[in-house]
Length: 103
Image 1: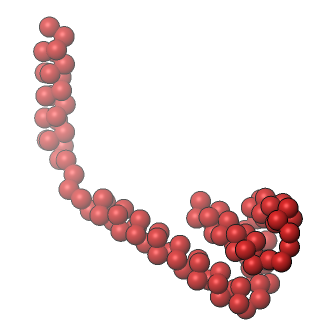
Image 2: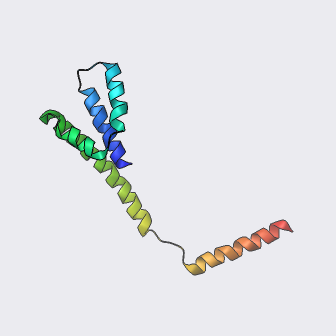
Image 3: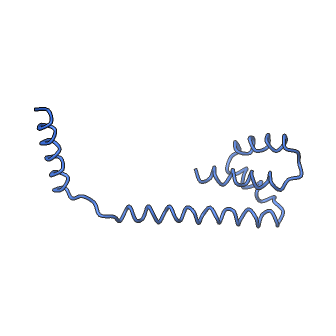
């Protein structure tokens, strides 16, 4: 999914900085989303220096937001978890509550 997001950002960037008419840009956006990764790389390599710089800045912004998600993931992965004994106690309690409710 990150590759698709970056591809969409490339297409948006090209659309925002292109002198072509809107109808052509809409068609171009649809076609560029469907291209392969290697083709996308080749298109990006052909960008003028100013557009390349802007694109690089946008991609770096995306990396920052992914890092924030990674921090959350790291927190969740290091958070405390139930022990086997605690899980067994929860299961036992649930069974007792369910038996009590059905009486």
